[in-house]
Amino acid sequence: MIRASGVGSWPQEPVREVVRRLRDVLADGHVPYAPEIPSRGPGADLVGRTAAQLAEMPVDLQPSGWRLTDAPGRDVSRAGAYLREDLDELAEAYDGYTGPMKVQLCGPWTLAASLWLPRGDRVLVDAGASRDVVQSLAEGARELLRRVRRLVPGAEPVLQLDEPSLPAVLTGRLRSASGFGRLRAVDPGVVESGLRTVAEAVDGLGGSVSVHCCAPDVPFALLRRVGAVGVSVDTSLLTERTWESVAASVEGGTTLWAGIVPTDTTATHPRQVVEPFLDAWSRVGLETARLSQVVVTPACGLGTRTPAEAASVQRLAVDAAGLIAERL
Image (cartoon, rainbow, N blue to C red):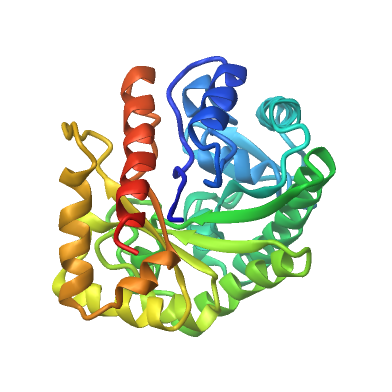
């Protein structure tokens, strides 16, 4: 069986309705996930939701964004309330469930690029602060997975680390606080070590990790060295060269969370999104049997779509997984 899942974000709807909708769509062996609804406001966004989970690193929300501070701001309490509500709904909807269940956090390097120091620079410019964020996130991720396992005892947790800024961190493409300069690239060895720290923290709880990067230049080789179990990508951004990197990762045992369904798709049949993916798979010489390492997802989050559009895209991902399974 080929499984389907989602990336994370969902349009504005009552969380109970979203959780139950996804439970029903992703039944029968697929990978359900905790939806994120960023349109609820500050604290429901990816960075705020994750920053509020940092261990012993308080943050508050300023006009410039989320900032490290001496005491947590009121938006942190709101973020915690959103997460509690989401996890409570998961517990009720998945009572008695056994199987994989995905939750999402901002990855350490996108988080360090998005958080601000008290003096106004990105955390990323301070090596010591970046290390502290990595360690704090590792503990926060551990606690999140502990909560998931307490609430849904049969769950096999999968942690998705969202790293949209990872290529920019590695290549020095991030703007400085002034907007006129660019931050120095972070050494790949340091980036690798930070990701491994978070991955190993989760592995110690029996969970697995997938890194989601919706960018054209995903650092596949670095992620293979980290040992991440999965890599989640928008397959429409893959070039001939990056497909070779995908092949090397899959042949090394990596699970490919393949975002083959565009979030703005006009496709009416799964064949329209499956055939281009299978053609590329074949061109790089990947064996058909290795399709068992694929989890089909939308290309990115669905938070900017309408509820009806999001539901249609998610259903198409499930149907596409079924069509790929027929090739095995």
